[in-house]
Amino acid sequence: MSNQTNRSTTGLNSKPARDTLAVALDAVNDRWSLHIVRALAFGASRYTEILRAVGAPRDVLAARLRKLAETGILQARSTEDGKVAGYELTQKGKDLGQVILVLKRWGDTYSDAEVPKVDFIHDVCGEVFVAEVRCQACGRPLRSGELSLDQESAAC
Image (cartoon, rainbow, N blue to C red; front, side, top):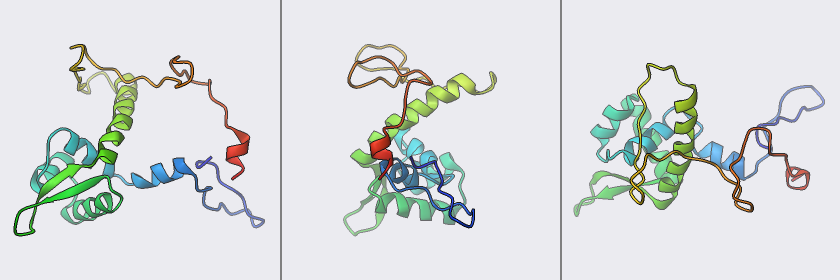
């Protein structure tokens, strides 16, 4: 699993094994990437709107926007003369929004009481949406301690 480290004969930690979880974590492994995706999902599209919503230094924001575009999470929208008119999430970026909704539930549970919550309404039923991770096979909600690592896939 990607968060496990291997020890070399000298005792130094080596880089975690590369697997799909590591790839996913690497895509958003900095301080700003998920904040940028959140800002775009909340409707920001222009550089200045993203800057205001995220609060990152300008050079850092520009670098993260480039990285997120290179990894296919967002794309620049261009005007007819080729200038960048704004940014939008790709399908890959929109799918990352589902991860953010699960993180939101965690934040709702563990944040201090004075931190304001943001609620989302499920347009289909009109109720407040609460993300829940379920097993695709049996449909039951996942609870802490109910997963074990498939040793065959971990051996890769």
